[in-house]
Every structure is written in structure tokens, then in C-alpha cells.
Length: 180
Image 1 (spheres, helix red, strand yellow):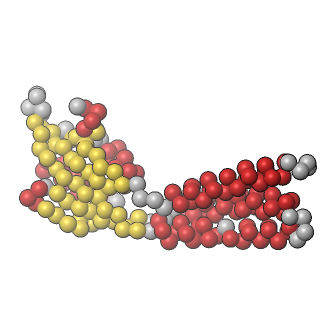
Image 2 (cartoon, rainbow, N blue to C red; image 1 turned 120 degrees about the vertical axis):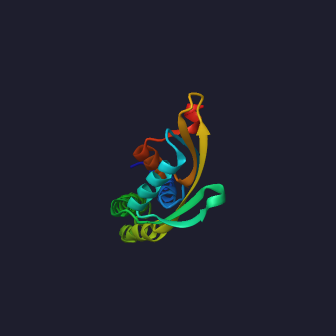
Image 3 (cartoon, rainbow, N blue to C red; image 1 turned 90 degrees about the vertical axis):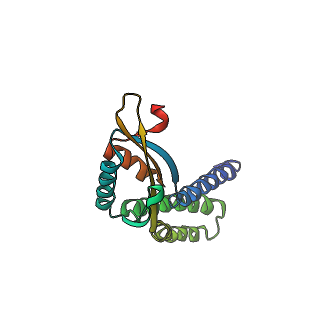
């Protein structure tokens, strides 16, 4: 290889390593959102469905505020084996690429850089420790009357975005913004 190729390859590999670092860091980030949802049923029957839904998802009632029709559920988020293994393999490939470029740049004892790949299981350990956490979902129920006098309920939900998506799909709820 010519001399200018190695430094430019190193810069590109270093940029990819930075991207990998932020990808790994983002894998354990909280993604809490608040959303208003609307249901085509009365608040009492919806509350029963919500309690059954959260019980089936291994959440428990952490706090209630009957005056404001507010309930907070808590549940343990378990780490994903697939994601831990995927992040470890991704890190191993990234560190291998970095080690190969470094070994070409530093020709004397460059094979020592291949030892960087041994550090890849630390990524899986990092993910495993940080992703296991207690997560809360807060609900606030409000009754609404449609112009056709059909019973409706508005739910203000605050929780992880994946949990909100699953809740909407499971109970057939629609976003308040899309209906109004």
C-alpha cells in the first residue's frame, strides 16, 4: 500500500470506532415518552383491561392517586441475550478492524494490537449491567364525550417508547393527535 492510504484508512476506522462506541452507549439509554391515547370505551372497563395487560407483562402497581385517576406501574426490564451477544460480536469485529489497521501502521510488534479483540466481552457485560433496571409506566385516565355520545376515555401514558407501542397495539388504542 502507498503511504497516504494507511493514514486515511486509520482515520476512517477511527470514525467507525467512535460510531460503534455511541451505538453501544445508546443501547442502554432510557427512551421515556409521554403520549395521549384514546379508547372507545368507558374508563372503568378500560382500567380493568389496563390492569390485566400490565399484570400479564409482569408489572405491579407501585402508586395510585384516586383523586386524579392516576396509576403508576413498575416492572423489571430484563436484558436481551441476543442484544448482548450481538453487541459483543459487533465490538469484536470493530476492534479486529482497528487492530489490523494499527498493526499495518506500526509494523514493529504490530501483532500485539490483535489483543484488543479480547476486550470485546466487556461490551456485553456493560450492556447486561446497565439495561437491567426498574421501569415505570404512569397512567392518567380521563373520561371524554364524543359528539355522537359514544363513551370514550383519554389516557395520558408516560413510559418507555417500546412499552407504549406494545400497549397501543395490544389494546387497540389510537393516538389522541391522530384523531383530533
